[in-house]
Amino acid sequence: MRVSRSEVLTIPNGLTFIRAFGVPIFLWLLVGENLRGWAYLVLAIGAWTDYFDGKVARWLHQESKLGAAMDPTIDRLYIVATIIGLAIKSYIPWWMVAVLIGRDLWMAVMLMIYRRKSGNVFTVTFLGKSATFNLLYAFPFLLLSGHSFWGQVAHVAGWSFAIWGIGLYLLTAFGYSRLALTLKKDS
Image 1 (cartoon, rainbow, N blue to C red):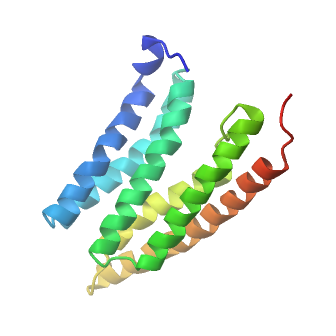
Image 2 (cartoon, rainbow, N blue to C red; image 1 turned 120 degrees about the vertical axis):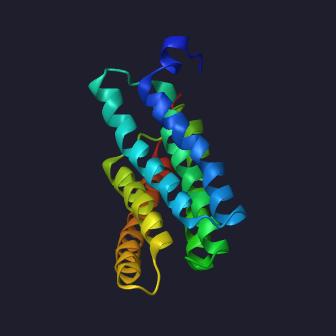
């Protein structure tokens, strides 16, 4: 894909790049330095930029193929890095890591099949964005969970978002898989 400079240097892509830089910073803060509050802030900024990059792109008429490809890729990196960091610190169980990473590996195979048949990538759906939204909001709450009253509230809110997010994540995988496996190859 050939991309012009004006397509790369946009405000929405800048927000997406900020989110990308947050991935290693989050891991360093949480796992390396055990700075839970700062790690929380990085996750919150990541969720915020994920929400606003698409809205800003549409508002400023700066939608781009690069942005459309980068956004879900950075979302996956964020989710994988976050769940691994949270599992290492025992905020979430390892089965959640296995389910979410297993789903993403499955989707990588489905994407290859779909791309081979259609020459395109999956179009991000509202359901897919909802799944990512729920997961990206679950993780900061789970990070704040603890034994205090507010820690318990954060725990319940985090698991509520996580359960919805995992359910929607698996449902979107089913939908994308069905699309990839039933599509007839273009001649």
